[in-house]
Length: 342
Ligand code: 89Y
Image (cartoon, rainbow, N blue to C red; front, side, top):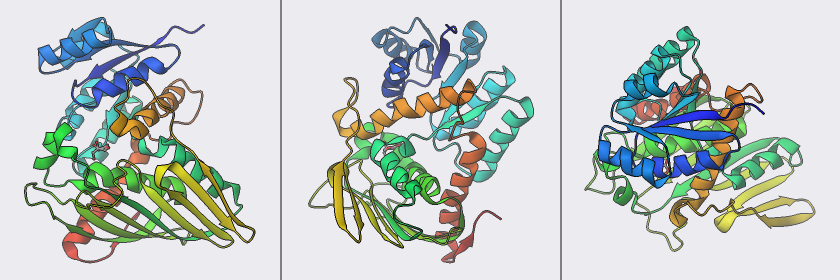
């Protein structure tokens, strides 16, 4: 049996308390240390999950523990320095989304790791949600033929700021926090985009950034995709964090509807099945769909790191997703369509 993969975590905020137990779900993986600028937070998180060591200084952690991979779960403005530090110590690194607050910084980070020959992955978990994986399987089966139009909706009034107060202060909010996930799902389903057009709005007057975004993308495979995102939508059925999907294709349609129902309609009628996520005891019920996807996301990154499979969300790959995110901001600023992938 191979020795266990030793994971160290930098950052002891909201998401670390779920990413650590998700690491511990994987066979042959151990969590060796936690680090946070706030030593008390690092210690209490380490104690809670029986992680043997805790640190306040990330460089000290890397030198003292030499982990097999470091999971950076800090806020976006710190990602560049944390990734550069891991690269300096030649330690493979997973970075939380969004990789950076602008495309140039993200490209620099990918460049640093490429030059140092250090694997860089992005913790992009959304595409690992079970219902979305099922949708992708139906698409790939070819049963419905070529898709021509799709809509992905993520609209809610869930109080995200209660758990993640810093989101209130972001100049760029819903596209960089949630659009990054949804636009990654667009790429997962349909490949790369040719151009996009976007409009953003700020409805909640107590936050700094935009909380509503509407993006239309023309994909290279000729599918037209619209994405609607909102944290300002008070709806009859509050379904956070579910995203709904409708795909229209040559021979039928495919819907991901509330409560994880997948409905496939073709000339013979509609077949429905429910694809709920796997539930874990450590998950927060309000986020269970996302928390469950963390385990599968981690597994894929470990398999990529160990050369057992292709990691889907590498740093290189994620640049294409970020191009869509920052292209959307640019389009909204110019009130014009923006070419992508040029
Ligand atoms: O930060 C976001 C994420 O990744 O999933 C939902 C969230 O917590 C709030 O938008």
